[in-house]
Image (cartoon, rainbow, N blue to C red; front, side, top):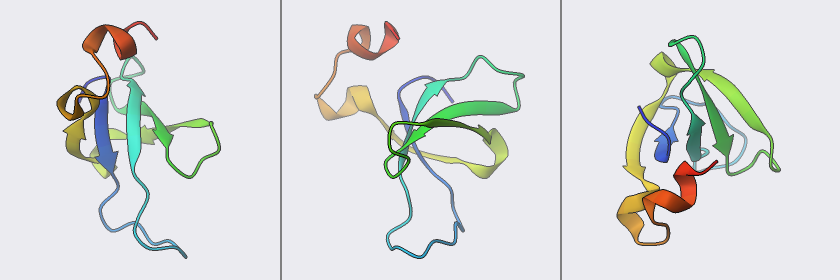
Length: 73
C-alpha cells in the first residue's frame, strides 16, 4: 500500500450502504497500520490495520490529481 491508494474495508458493517471508501494518506506508521481519510469521516484521518484494508485504485489513475499534488502532503 502506498500514499494515494483508494481503499475499502471488506466485510465492513455499516448502517449505510455502500461501504466507506478511503484514501491512504500516510503509510509511515509502524508498518502494520496506515492513516486513511474516509469519505464519511468529516475530514478526520484514522489509523487502520493494513490487514483489514483492500486497495481498489489510486488517485493518480483517475486523472484528477498528479502525483505531485498528493505526494506533497
